[in-house]
Length: 306
Image (tube, rainbow, N blue to C red):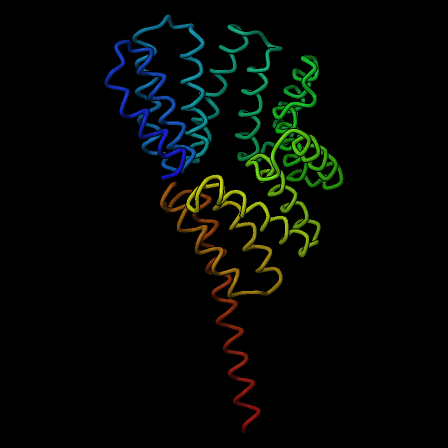
């Protein structure tokens, strides 16, 4: 049994002993976070909603714990691909954070980062980049340029610039983020893997396929060890690795990666989610190319013996 699974089991065993709704809400919230981490998004949503309702019952409407619970639900909506709803919830959370904590508080910067992730998915890259610049400016003012949060926002800004097509700027941002993380984190930390994954995507776009493959494989090993074989982060990296292998015409290996990514995404997100559909399209493309290649080889062999 993994450490995370043991933690979940322990939390479930003590929840009935809690007398206050607030304490129960905190436990529901923590269980939801564990389930979301594993990609069990439907179960996580139930726990997050229980936490929110319990907080609302026990605490004033403007209490930060309620804002945190609402933010967790917004992030979950994002992961489920419900971007319009996630945007609306995140904008509400951002407005509350500015009132409760201040526009220049690090927690406000975190919400800006979440909003930027949504806008990237909506292909609103300029808006996302602007939000990430604001988040970085807040941490800069807090003298937190060497923090993991600062490195994370740098990484996300690099990803946004990459999507805009500014590959040289993206390269600098992603490498700077990775440098900061390596100074303070274990080499096998999930945040290191996140940076490696983004750099691998950049190298793919730069047509540096061998480098991309090695970065994806390094990220994949860490993500499997950290999150388990069936997490959405693992699916994302398998999908990226499959695309590299497809570009190298290594069709059997690409098909295996797409199958793994598709299985995880369908189970966690449903077959209609855009990420699941993406894996399916790439899988069909690779399978068709393999079939066409086999047919050509058979035809060539037949003509050679005629």
